Amino acid sequence: MIVAVLTVLILILRFSIEEFAFYNKQWHVGYLQQYLKFFIIGVTVLVVAVPEGLPLAVTLALAYSVRVSLTYIVITLRVINNKTLYFYP
Picture 1 (cartoon, rainbow, N blue to C red):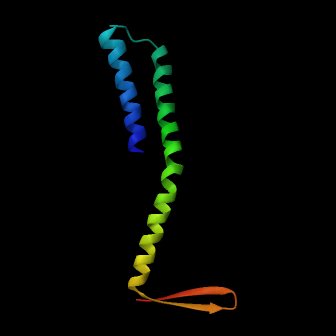
Picture 2 (picture 1 turned 30 degrees about the vertical axis):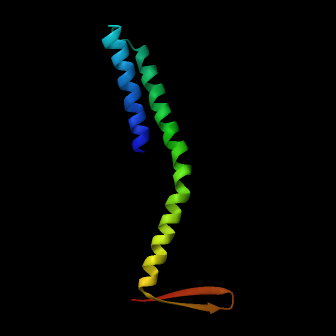
Picture 3 (picture 1 turned 90 degrees about the vertical axis):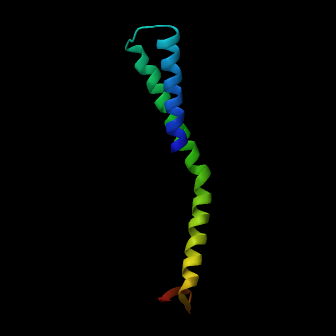
């Protein structure tokens, strides 16, 4: 998420400095479309980045939960084809 926000901020700053500081152009409503494109690029970066990090996040969460469950006395009972997990802290 931080990368998406930074991408949008960098694009907006670069565009604004280039248009208003270097070329000394005046503000008009057409620039809103350009800023909207920058926002869409940021959302796209966010959407693409989530599936890339999701497997890592799930793996880390499972590893943490296994380590936490090892600190308790965990008894697993097998009843026909169902498994029931009992915690005794």
